Image (cartoon, rainbow, N blue to C red; front, top):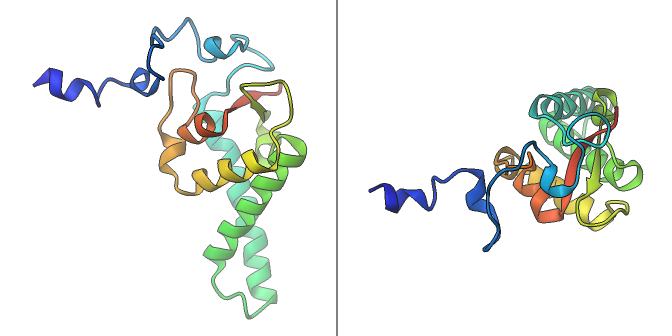
Length: 158
């Protein structure tokens, strides 16, 4: 029985491309060439959650204000989601961080090249995050499936 379930219950290393060994390294982000700690290191889950919480509360407040002022926008939950997506795409594309990430000391960088994230990657990263599940499944480097798909990594900026 264990042989049958091992292929899908093997943990984060099961998501690695064929041929890559899932030894995990000494710390999160080592395989990506990131430092172990300090600025530029892989962000912890707690900081990532704090950043998204700050972004969501900011967008929730703005959506509440907008739905109060504009009667046509009656569904504040949808307005909140749209605002959060717009803030996420524009923030990561233009500044490499969202307001919430900036407050908790995080940023988004490309894992495959030392260049800016770019609009298409920022858009697809946020689109996959909306579905929540890709962001919850992490690999050995602490990257969610949305980060793996767009070749990005959330790093500490301070």
